[in-house]
Length: 258
Image (cartoon, rainbow, N blue to C red):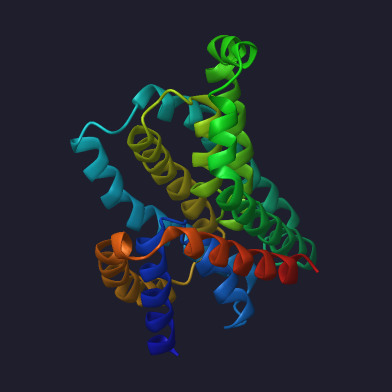
């Protein structure tokens, strides 16, 4: 089974490197639906997996000056407290009980479907955000307050499902900060995901919903998978890859919700 986990990590890492889609939207459903792992354990393990894998990316982006730390701070001011509150609620109601399992599975399905929608409509949303004087003025006044609120929503969603810090966070930032360079939005989102997934993951670890042997097996496969996928990403036509991946996510999300 450890070999199967490593091969799955390799496949998911390859897709992440190829498309840039967050691993949680692929890895967590795979663990739940294919391997039959308890939803809470799948989420908790994937959160620590994400914090480790995204740390390297955050360091690279930071060294290149691609991180807007004010933006990261605004997101974290909402997401980290929200993650702590969500962990506390899961602990009170029993993280591996029927209620929590249903909540986690349903949240995972919704988060995966939202990720698919974000993949399909991100470019249209960015184009819409860059037009309209009224919307621009509103963002100038309220962007950072709304960013903190967005962080809080993402914090809850990520703690429950391990999904949302990637595609959903980037899409929200594109709408809130349309004039910001894409590389700075991506770098800032990755940098923000590190403390969020670490706090949420350590919260799950304290509740006993992290499988360290599973974590090691996934990392063993995913790290070379991400490396290979990243080097091949420029050779794969995005116009069919993105819709295909989004369609797969909608099917998976629908199965989890239903």
